[in-house]
Image (tube, rainbow, N blue to C red):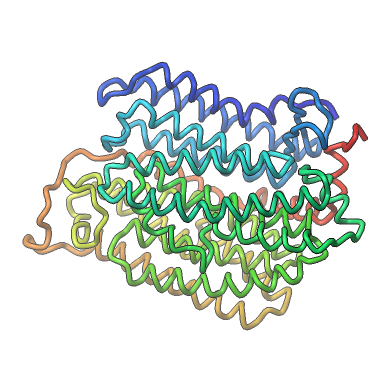
Length: 503
């Protein structure tokens, strides 16, 4: 198969845009760098959409770096899963850059902010598209270092502390990932995913390979903030600048989900049943832990960060059930959740930006809705409906897919627990809407200065329109998810398209 430049474009367009952005300074008045970044991210999003269309029409596409044949050379592979996740990431990141254009945070004026934001996109798209394990590690670390740097320069005074916590905890994930990679290389003499998948498909199971599977799954669970590896996430996501926190809780955590899907479908398909049992247990615990923690927390952004732990739990449960219908539900849930969660975090940022401390603490934002344009409350209501799984938003399609897959596999107890936790989501989302936007605060309850000008709600409004569209017109996404699962169920497709040894 010949090289397809679209595969390379999704990774290198944000890279070159970031380099160009470094040539421009950034101040409160001069926003040239932000507009250049917006053009670059929009172009990346368009290319990812073209790539997905081509993958669905002509099958998986590849790009061999430097012309070297795999497994010796680095190869980028776009199959249904990686192309779909790349569209999800590129679209949400484009909206993040759009939000940043009119964001009031002082850290946005740092010359390195937008380039770091785009380098995070490079790491994200690269991790989704790479065809070998070591390059996956490199792209993932690029994504982590970029996001840590952005949190460290945040306006929040606790930003540096949260960044330090994450860099140490993430180091544990990095260690697990490196040990897993080393174990795989020592066992199979290759880091190419297709090559490893082909060798594992022969039934060889050296002891080191099983150890590698454990270390890799631990690394992916930690990167996805899955219970009990979640403890770094609330502080890190809450203190991040709004454009970044909207990315962390929506698309960055999905890289771990992507890694788990590859692990159980391409590499360790024979051991998938044992891994899946673990995922169901962790997923159900995570759903309730995340939902109950979201009910009790004191900050709007923190509530949404805990909510992500619960929502990722839904995805893990579906992967754990392992049926084609459940895997399709996991993909649909991952895709829809990215748009919903990023929109809600941006809206919370819009609210917080109107206050002098720029805080989403409920002590400050409760009752502030009467001073805000009504459209912000209406958008939050739409987002609450989407996250809770109410029609006509796309969250309803996600929850329906989860329920159908549970019924199909007769998983009655986990299904009952999952539906019960959905009620908790409904409670904390609409309680927040009621307290922030519908209840008029007493004059002495708000002791902070209110600013007439804040961040623009344009980006979250566009994201919620996408959520509404995906709810009303869900068939294409459902069809793509089903086609993706059919492709994942036959690893020889991925192995064949990589063309090991020029085959």
